[in-house]
Length: 299
Image 1 (tube, rainbow, N blue to C red):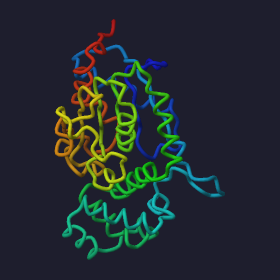
Image 2: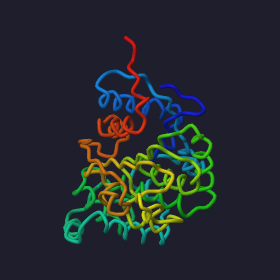
Image 3: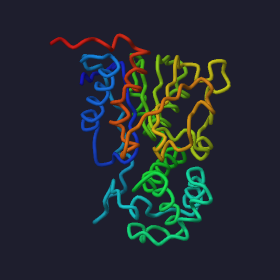
């Protein structure tokens, strides 16, 4: 993958990347991005100029003996919740499951994996897993917890925004945000109306959730314009798997009239960024905005 200052395509990653780094993520994003372009183009293409805004290390907890930053254990992902966080996570869970599903989970047997999780969240996690698949509840609440931290902690937000600003140079024409990264990327667009983009591409985005929008400085930037998207974006395409718990609020066109929603099937790992990037729906979105990226690879 060609990576240099002044990349045409810039990605903003999602949550739970604390134990990785920019170059490790480039090795995951880069081939998947090129695979999606090749599917759309119909033959091998030259790897596009691509860079990634990496900020995952900012979510590492303070170093303490025995502490596991970036753990996926439910009790660690949801450790040290304040009362405000607990109330907000319980409220936002109601956007993902029905009262009937929650009642069924409450009536069901406990799940061993969740016995160390705060008791009010245990039924919510079981209901989310029943609807979206194993471990979906931890993914959903873990994503929303990091989204909340980004939006309510000014110093953290300023650091993340600064990293994205440095990565997204004036040569960037395509900005891709996955998961929490779609929230961070939308904030970039709001903060930099002078930077015109040919494509804003969101993957597995939680922007449809009320909790997320209610915390944004501008809940629906660009929604009331004639184009129905932020004024510095020529096109906004949102790709989601309907079984992705993070994108469970549905299509974004109901909020931003100009958004083009596309559905994909990522099978068992619905929120996985590599599966999103490697789809023809993603590759064709990028090629539609930047045809010059479809340069055939010499054989």
